[in-house]
Image (cartoon, rainbow, N blue to C red; front, side):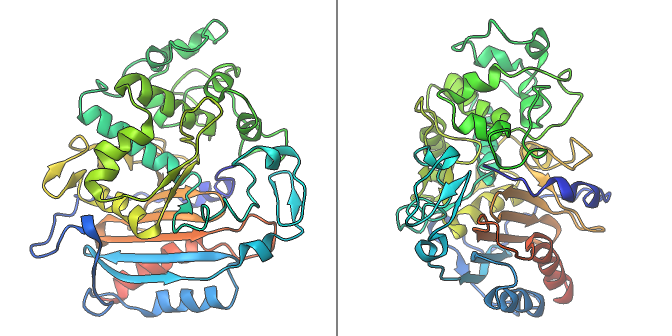
Amino acid sequence: MKTFVLAALCAALLSGCAPSAPVSQDEGVPWPTNGWARSTFAAESLDSAPLDSLHAGILAGTYGNIDRMVVIRNGRLVMSERYARDYAEISRGRRSFIGCGEGEVCEGLGAVPGYNYFDPQTHPWHQGRDVHSLQSVTKSVTATALGAAVHQGALPGVDVPLLAFLDDYDLSRVDPRLRRATLADLLTMRTGIEWHEQDRPLDGTNTTAQLEMSADWVQFTLDQPMDADPGTKWAYSSGGSQLMSAVIRKATGMTVDAWAERHLFGPLGITDYHWKKTPTGLPDTEGGLYLEAEQLAKIGYLYLKDGVWDDQRMLPEGWARQATSRIVEEPGYGYQWWRLDRDSTEVWAGLGFGGQFLLVLPAHDLIGVLNAWNVFGDVAGSILMPFRDALIAAAQGGGS
C-alpha cells in the first residue's frame, strides 16, 4: 500500500520555479561512497533552529511514529537522528485490512506474506536490520535504475513502446490504445490504464490492494481496463510502477535488484538493502525496497550531481533534470519523482506511504531523508511540509 496522502498536496505544489543547474562537486569534499563526511550546521552555513524545532516536535510526539531524520549539506552529514520505537508494542492488538499486529490473526491484505504492514518483524524495519521500508520512494529509485539502463545502452531511451518489453505476458486482452504507450508514459503515470489508488480507502476496492493480493502483479496490471489515451491523463498507479520491474528484466536480462546492485547500489557503496519479491519472483518496484536513511540520501546526491558519481557518469546527461521536472504540471510529477516547490525554491521528492521522504533542494545543495511508520490510524500531524519548510528555512537563515 503506497502514497495515499498525496492527493491533498496537488493544489499546493504548482508554484513556478526557474530551473537550477546541477551542483558541482566542491573541491575537497569526499564522495560518500564509504560513508558521509561529518560536519556541523554552522560550518555548512545552515541555521539549526528550524530543524531543532522539528526535532523537538518529533520527541514530543506531534508527528507520530518518526524513526529517522537525516540532513546532508554540501556533501556532508550535519544531522542524523534516530527515534526508538517499540513496534511490537505499538502494533499489539491492532487490526485493519492492511495488517495485524502482535497477538492478532490477519485477514485481507495483511494475510499476504510480506504485506502485513503491522508486522513488526517486516515493517517498518526488516527483521531487526537497519534497513527501513521506503514504500513508494521505491518508485523513484527504480526509475533511477531504469535511467542507468538507458545510459548503459540496455534501453534505447524512453520514447519507445512500452509493450515491446512486455511480450512475455498475455497481451491478447489489452486495449489497443495501450500499444501506443511509451516508457515515458509509464514513468510519468500516464499510460491510460484505469487505476483507483488515491481515490479509494485502504480496503478491497483499492486497485493497489487488489494488485498486492494477486498472483501475477504484471499480468494483473495489464488486464486492467483503460480510461484514457496514453499521455493524456495522469493517474497515480502503483501497478504502472510495477511494470518497470518487468521492463528492466526484459531489457537487461537481470532482475532490477541484481541490475541495481551492479550499476547503481554497488558504485554508490550501498551494500545493505532488502527488496521484497512478488509471487512470480519479480522484485516489487512499487514499494518493496528497504534502505538505511543515510544510504537513501546517496540517491538524492546522485541527482544533485546530474547522475555523476566519483567522476563516473551513471545516468544519461540531463536525466536528473528531466526526471525531476514538472513533466506533468499538475500535480507536479516527473519520472516517478514529485515536485514540492515552495515559492522560488525547487524541491525534488520521493514520497512513500507511512512517511517516507527523500527531499532534494538543488539550489541549496541540501538533502533531507525522513522515515516514519504512521500507518495505524492514530491521529498525528503531517510532517512532510514542516520538514520541507524547515530545510528551506535552515538554508535561507544560514545565509545560503
